[in-house]
Length: 215
Ligand code: CTP
Ligand code: MG
Image (cartoon, rainbow, N blue to C red; front, side, top):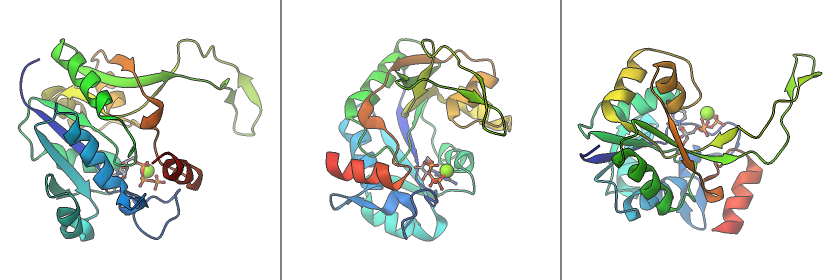
């Protein structure tokens, strides 16, 4: 699909699992916030025309100082609210949704996702094979089944969409842990491209330590 590309960067979470005093996107790795690193990766990819970040309402002004090349909006209570807030202010035909917390994502991953959209996919996610064996368990912690991990992928961001497709999926208030999940529920085929280990999400203190060692 032709058209302009907007990168929407949800950065309005508190980072409860990380447990740092600041909201997660404002935590620094090697002297640079996760927010700045994520915006820089999108910008450096060369395939993004516009960047919109969604941050906690009381940090809109500080975010404008940190990432002057991006548009800044106030996010919402849930990640999907933050994505919708960013989506509301763009008229780009193609959108990438990228977690600010995936701060070490290489610019090449943005390039790969946009290339798949240009080739005609309406929804694209980066994914990697799962290394661990997965167990399905019951509420008491007993194993119920061991699914074949071969067809499984751990998915990352940036996730790319035809903007109208993402708008439609977000309008039908569904429940999903990522944007592709909403789009799938709306019946749209989602293409998986090869992800990148560096696109891991900083979620826990361990992840932050890892990010600091890698940066
Ligand atoms: N996010 C957001 N708005 C929210 C919740 C999350 O913009 N209301 C963003 C986060 O800032 C992050 C991305 O969505 O960049 C992925 O979410 P997650 O890793 O879960 O971050 P947090 O919600 O901040 O962390 P936690 O769930 O541990 O509180
Ligand atoms: Mg969260």
